[in-house]
Length: 65
Image (tube, rainbow, N blue to C red; front, side, top):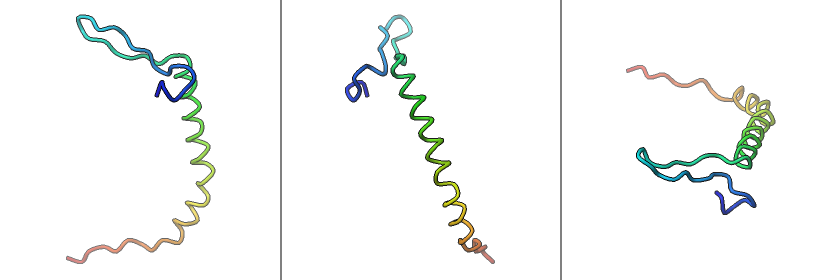
């Protein structure tokens, strides 16, 4: 991910007794927040169309066995 953006999204932490890890940078936080907002907006944009399609679906067939 870091290679795909102008600024790093995550930074690595040096390993110690309990190992290292990663941490989101300020840019990483911004990208994550923007991505989450885009997901919410995308879901809202298609909700009415999905609801309309759902109304056209047949009822599920239940087994008689």
